[in-house]
Length: 314
Image 1 (spheres, one colour):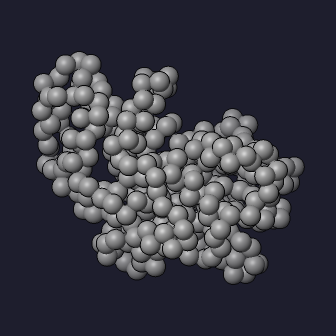
Image 2 (cartoon, one colour):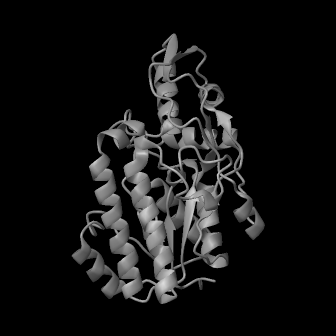
């Protein structure tokens, strides 16, 4: 268990996941949190990361920093996604190990699992068949980080763990028109359609893919729980174990936002993976389950979107 005054470094504290982890740690009474902005510490620079760890020597590390984006961003910047994520995570994990970090938790993504993995996806299906091509670069980087944690455990007896979240949403999400994920993109689109009184909104694909969504504060709760209660080489899935079609999600977002126009579908645009559901029996067996239902989570996210000064510029 982490002591309440233990020195805890949250990498990526300004992102959606990192900021939720900071909120959760503070809520639980942890008092000695270390954070650095990208300007203060570029995690892609090995010399900067080494100097930071030598000076601060955090006892616990939550590695939530990453270069992320939706389908468009992933497909158009494959090399950048792979390089930035690989370098960043290797720098942090290696420096943590070199400086005697007691425990590190690495955050990945459910895109690490094979495109046609049996559903719901168990942690053990990792690397059993090929990845989804559209985000292969990001997935390979995340798999490398997860494996590096596992190999350090095996070779040096460290206690480094990893957690693989499903699709996330919530406060501090990215609402960029082209570089955001499906749920924040829908929130923005329906909000603008409502404001502009548009008669219809066109969405990508045919609405048939099935997706699972986890509210980011629930993930943060699990992250702290795992740091205190789990050790092992295999990753832990973070999700709800529930799924819905993109069509049903779209209708739910429109309803929460109060958009009453028509929803049209453009089947010439890509659908992405047909189904992505995580098997969450492992976290359930450890004693954890999610709290926030999707409708309530979307309501909270929309509230955050309306109060988010960055949304216009992003």
